[in-house]
Image (tube, rainbow, N blue to C red):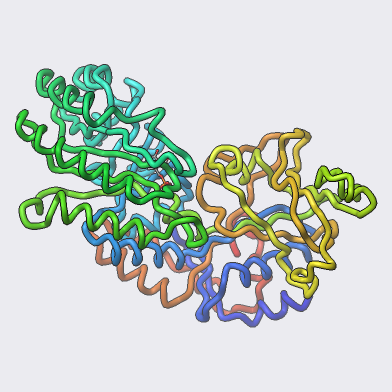
Amino acid sequence: MDNVSIASELPLRTELYSNHALTVFTDHRSPVDIAKDVACLKSAQGDDLPFMVMDAGRVMAQMAEWRRLLPRVEPFYAVKCNNDPVLMRLLADQGAGFDCASKGEIDQILEHGLAPPEKIIYANPCKTRNYIKHAARCQVNMMTFDCEDELHKVKSFHPHAQMILRIAVSDPTAQCPLNIKFGCDPIQAGPALLAAAAELSVDVVGISFHVGSGCNDPTAYAVAIGHARRLFDLGDSLGHQMTILDLGGGYPGHPTENITFPQIAGMINGALDEYFPEVGYNAVRVIGEPGRFFASAAFTLVTNVIAKTKVPASRITQNEHDATTDGFMYYLNDGVYGSFNCILYDHNRPTGRPLFERPEDTDASRQTWAALWGPTCDGLDQITSKCRLRRLNEGDWVAWDNMGAYTCAAGSEFNGFPRPNIYYFIADKEWQSLREQSLSSPDGQEDEIRSVASSFSSCSGFDSAFGDEYDNFVY
Ligand SMILES: Cc1ncc(COP(=O)(O)O)c(C=O)c1O
């Protein structure tokens, strides 16, 4: 096939990174370029399984953006968002800490040497007592709480815990509001909980909040930082050593959302200057728990049309006027029980497009009404109820951008459909910079970054880069 032979001329090699193959290109490649090459090769091999491509350079660009716009805030990546091992290693190599919700997440960080215990926050206000004991054994001390019962549990099972009080300050318009479930009232309950902790001799070291995942109103951060300042003063007066301000998550993962990261960063920096100026508060460690900010845009999902049905368009539009026009129901091989669980749980509305563009893609007169379904037998498994698309055929590939946040992390294999394989890539310039960062960091893991370039030194072709290990991981 044409594309396979084009790919065979690509200057590429493979590095082993976090035990996964990372394809390094000496020239610049977009996720769509890579996806097209992978799709061509899979089609040529009779493989129509869905897959993802992960652009490691995008994660690095996000980290650079974070450090540029929020220089005072240490990122503690929210593992729940996507615990992909390559993503996590990339973040660790660039100095990130981690926000963990459970024993399993803490173990993933510690067992892979991604960060020392002091760069982990156990940021789940309601913790299993056995997990608290486990955190104590692992010396993970920073943890959040929002009620008195949790203080009693922690006093019994983790005497060295450094507690961080989570207050509820909400952006009600957030994609996923969180403050109905977590966080205490900052005016009434917050002071009482600081006093109760002092009484119990449980150390409180700071204040945290989460304005809502997928924040739309940045003023919520400023309001929360104002409350935190008042509670810092109160905590200090009660004998707590208040040193940690945790800004939680909520930062957008890609620029098409309603709000931009620079807008949120501007609001946060202004509030920090007002309530925690560097002069006087330089001992305060400010941390954040970004999830989607790092994960979303780095992953592109590619699904395959496994079946299609022609129907009267009215069945899709629910409009009798469309009864005489053709509409199509396309069945894809990933759905809401897999990567598209983000539709149900993250209130996301992904939009797909044919991976291989044609002129009619943008010609409205050649588009029809279409509904997109997942592959399971469940009627709930619908990805898009109604959209305009050019006619697709069985075997066509459909691409979905920004599919890294709250997608694969919660996907299942319900009905026996496998999760998408992930192909990782990076440009050589970024690879070199990553190596420098990871070698210069105190936790640098040179032995984990083992070049396997020699096995592809002849670069005889794209096929050989896949080789026998194609099914495992190699792009
Ligand atoms: C405690 C906590 N921190 C951080 C996050 C990450 O949020 P986001 O992905 O919006 O940055 C979440 C998401 O639910 C969370 O519950």
